[in-house]
Image (cartoon, rainbow, N blue to C red; front, side, top):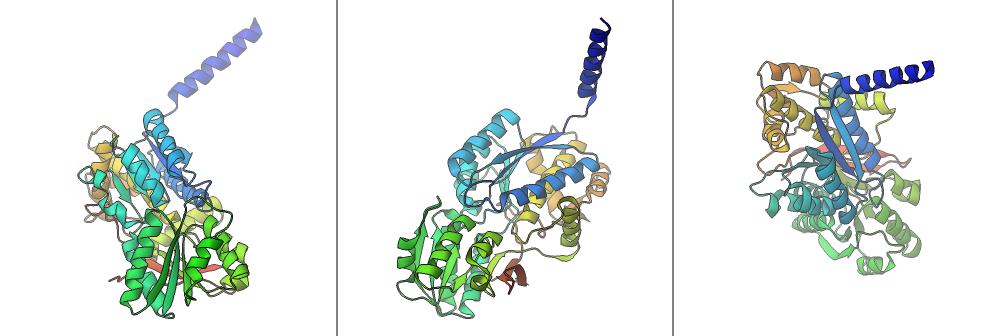
Length: 406
């Protein structure tokens, strides 16, 4: 009898604790690549979102995260997003990484359900003019369009080569970057000898594609794919075709590629990627990320993922202090108010300051870890483009950051 009384008391105490525990104010989903061709990137980007949520909770606004694996593939990503929207009731999705995933997920799930989707890594120019989002305004991104990266890549290629071939993943990302590169490179006087697509699904060999791409003996091969694709075909280019002159991009800015090919093969070879504006926002973010996770890998889009979660949280808080229900449309309507000028500048981690200002009815302007998150009418931002290289030890290092892109 005494034992039953003790057990009942423990149950009642536990139930009371659960009932009294503060509930999260909103749910945010992540749709990142933990398997598939972009699996190298997913966990680190997820850490960026986790960091933002932890900092917001410490500042007094709790966000619950729901994590799903896109598998870097449209069908499983669509199913995962349906679950987050219909079952978990997320107000926003941070993702996906691949443009070939973001576009179908946005068209079939998030836009029809009036749910915010902010991609930290989908750079296809198609996203800017996606017909299903015109007039709805639920698709955003915190990374720049490849209409910018391709210009810098073309200029970089023309600075030391006359001819190129391009091997690219056959989806909106690869197509947009390849076509933009060709236009930019040939405008600078170069010649693209071949444009060769390959399937999104990772293949065991790319010999057929390499034969087409290298038939004209180009000065260099642009590798516009994802790490799991490129580490196979670049190794084959080296071993079977004795060809080792490459140009990389954000999708092939990869530590796994350096390991697969070896330091000697990649040393001093260059590429482009969306960069960070640097300055205090990036310094603050870097210190916070290292304190939480021990190391900030030299991979793209971690800062962009953090910024995506940050602006959703800030917009939700702005809606809350105005007495609005924390629905996705209401939060969407506050995104530009908290991320665009004018307003007092808010840097990464400064959520308590931001919340205090919003409570006072004052405007804020979030300056992100990746750069300004000034959403235009299409939900796009403009951030710098980085020129990077593998150094003599195979480490990824920044060569320069370009701000003026024409």
